[in-house]
Image (cartoon, rainbow, N blue to C red; front, side, top):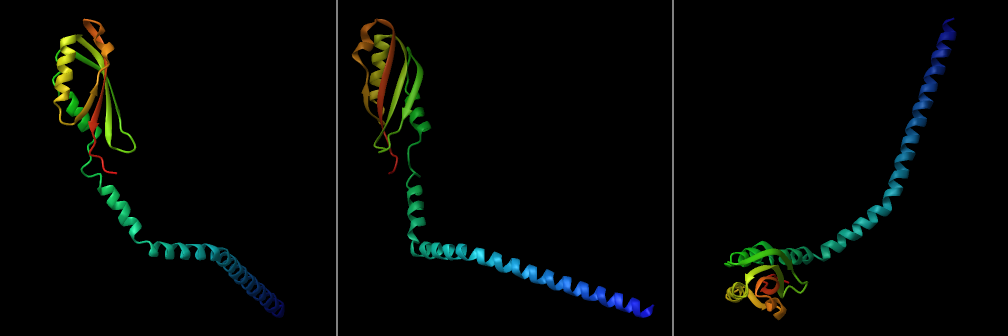
Length: 163
């Protein structure tokens, strides 16, 4: 029986040796396939890296554009400027602020009601004195009533926004 056990042991050892060989070869095959699939990605990325190295100023241009907004007027600063203007007898009910894409000026629309023509006229003159206001548009039809005048005033404001 000892030869039978030796033979069984030799067969078992050969089996595990063959199994290990097949496993190593299978693993090597998987690694080779993965490497072959990664070659196009490597080529694409190396080309992109070369392109990025040839354009070092792109980042600096973007940063200078971002820094150009450091001293820009914010919408809240524009609102504070207009709302800080005294307006007795004038009740503001709505504010609309629009910033055009060319950033030359901001347009603010104020809507509300005034107690009297004099109150609205005083507010108009007070807004004209604000340095940030370029022009004011109050439709003449606003003055049609003597009291409780609904109004819509359009202000063109200076914009310090960079390009």
